[in-house]
Image (cartoon, rainbow, N blue to C red; front, side, top):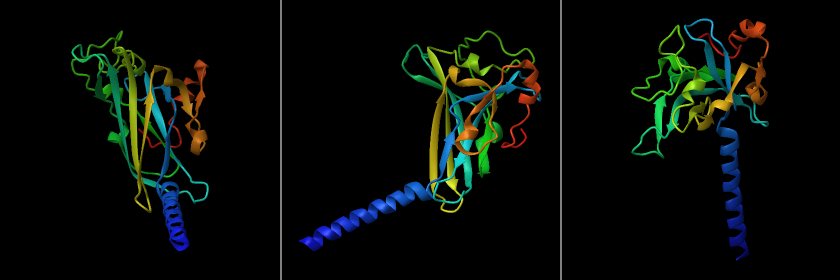
Length: 216
């Protein structure tokens, strides 16, 4: 009887250790910035550039490892557009840099929302006016005024470069999540913070691409 109990305890303990190793060691640990960075746009017929940042965080007991086959999907979710189903969400695809495909991330990566490429169909746009230089461009804040309420949903899927274990992270953003400023150049959680800007003369410096993202 004692032998049976000991065997059961050892078996359960072994399974728990194995689960912990897989959850903590093999699966990537990625994070999304809690806010959306808003900086002046200087290279397109748009006024603002909206970005989120992905951080590949290191497990404290393991060396830093790359994540690969990163996929980013974003959508604008609007509540209350359909009068026949007022409690449903209407989803509009929100294009992102590189169609959301990122080959690998070592530390972090910034992804831009391409609001000028959105297909809003016959949505009853409750916006004041598009940007004068681009009839298809809308400020993200204006899009988030649609319906009863609206939000941005971002889903990131990534795989560990060595184990191929996959993880998924989902974040939601509302109008108050948009902050004017660029992301910090630090790695890890600290790099997800936005360095706020309040001086107009700094706009040109703000518009420079973060060191962690490829040219877009």
